[in-house]
Image (cartoon, rainbow, N blue to C red; front, side, top):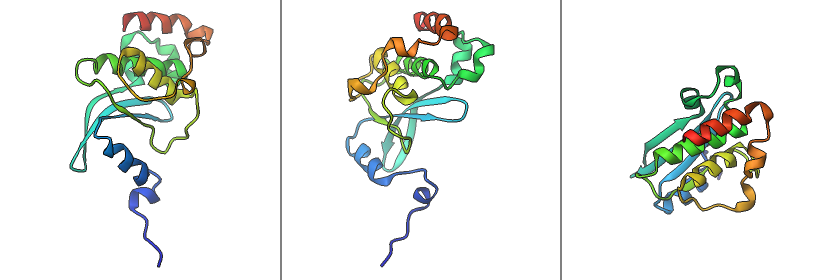
Length: 158
């Protein structure tokens, strides 16, 4: 007999096996998502199958931190992802100490934008279990000469 798939699985939004493993850890989840324009980073707690966003930051918030308007098309780049993670880590500093990474149905590609955001969160002081080989180093993150000045300026402010 064939099993009926759940609606969110059919819509390619939820992997229920991975979700249950993350929920079993009973730690808050560090959820990192990428859209066509932005990087979204959130810390989410689950209580009785209800998710609650504790802290949420998008790369759009970098515009108020000094990211130039002419580079607003690059708010999903690797440097923007790193700064978004760094901003989330600074905001979460006193409220959350550790979390578990949740990248959802995104592909697990080392040194990608998702891991760049994770690198920013870890550099801010949040404890997240990860592999050092998956994270891009600072030279790779700030390799674009157009964004390097802006990147260094915002990093110093945060």
